[in-house]
Length: 82
Image (cartoon, rainbow, N blue to C red; front, top):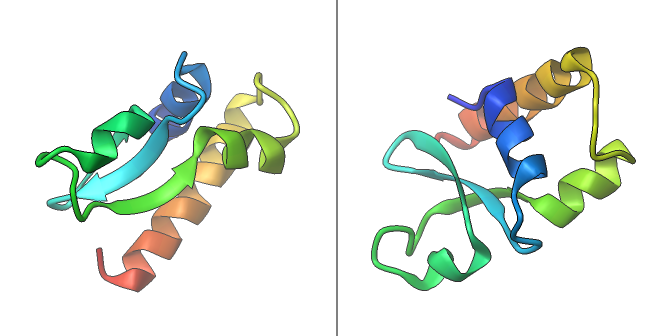
């Protein structure tokens, strides 16, 4: 569900408030302002761009770091049953 590409897209977002969400069983990176729209209302917010940058300590993680973060986030979402 959550791939390294999702993590990379979140970090590359121009929107400081961007969020990685899961809605209807699919992961997506959306602008922070989209959370109040009908398309994303009630979506599971996985991680914000700001929090992810803080966790990683960089805007340019290695491919391995992207894979590790994606696997960790995917595992957490799976355990939540989203």
